[in-house]
Amino acid sequence: MDRLHEWREEFLGDGVSNDFLFGAAAGCLATIVLALLMRIVPILRRNDIYDLAHWKLNIRVPMQPMWMNMGYWRTPRGDKIQQMDQACAALLREVLCSADLLTGDAVAEKELRRRRSIAILDVGFGCGDQTVEIARSLDAPAWQTFRYVGLTLNEAQLQVAYRRVEREVASANRHGVRLGPESFRLFGADAARPESWARPVRALVDGIADEAFQGSRWLLALDCMYHFAPSRAPLLLYAARELKADFMAFDLVLNERALLSARMAAKLVGRMAGCPLGAFMTEDRYVEQLVDAGYDRNAVQIRDVTSDVFGGLVAHIERQQRLLKPYGISMGSMGVAKKMFNWIDNTGILRAVIVVARVKSKAA
Image 1 (cartoon, rainbow, N blue to C red):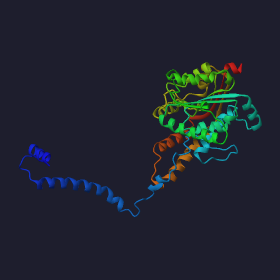
Image 2: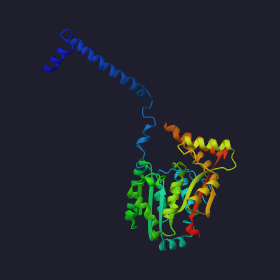
Image 3: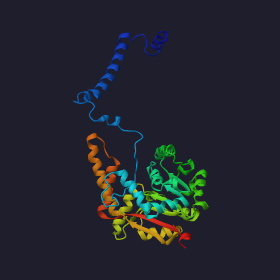
Image 4: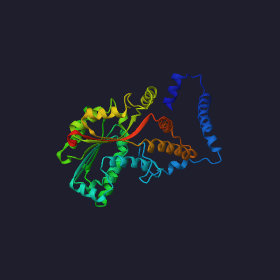
């Protein structure tokens, strides 16, 4: 109380009464309470104060799946796929099939894996679903040696992927399927610039060039390389010449029949989406880039899958918008992406392609 009295004497003087101070304090408190009531009362006046907000309490965390690629929206039988995770996994399997890593002959595949080793450098692997699907589709434990190295620039996705893969490996080991920690290595690094990789990362990636993986070294880029800055070239050059790794990817190329103005529009739209200005090129230029990097021109395969990609993705985003609207959930940036993909689908300015290329030394 003495300190309070001294403070009053120093700053307020004797002319200020206790009643005035109490009144001022009460006024401040009333203002705060009134502000809170103005926010709370409208909520309390609702017929149902909870509305549908409790959906947040019913989400199972960690959320599974967390796939993100454009998807392949058709089954092998030709039926339409309706779910995102199924379409994304289907796109990966289409790439693996094009690379002859999945043939449909289970007996032959099992024998091949028993006698061979495989190493995969996967760039832009997402939240771990892609990694797990690769391990399942290729039956990772069946290979003499299975090595997977993943690189991503997104720290949040890296942490989610760590936990996802750890759970998968632990589950496999509990069921008697042995997968060592060396089988899967995930790192945060800029895949587009190999010269920027930290020494431990570079050492592990360089290990893919080991003689044990001769004939089964792969660079996988699933729906990501058009984001690479400054371009795809540095990684392709490194993979072909340093790792002697074959290449499999899902990518986008410019439609060579499109008008120059349409091509420029596609480049500008890509730039606004965070892609380098030269990210989109024609198929012929794409092949030249592969050949310049060290891949065999006669061993480059480019398969057009446009009709099974953009339309299905747009339809799925529209469906999600309708289903989420009653819960007050906005699609946000995905709504903008829907418009962009719809424009691409309608104009045909970009083609969705699966690319497989093999290094020259193997094709000779």
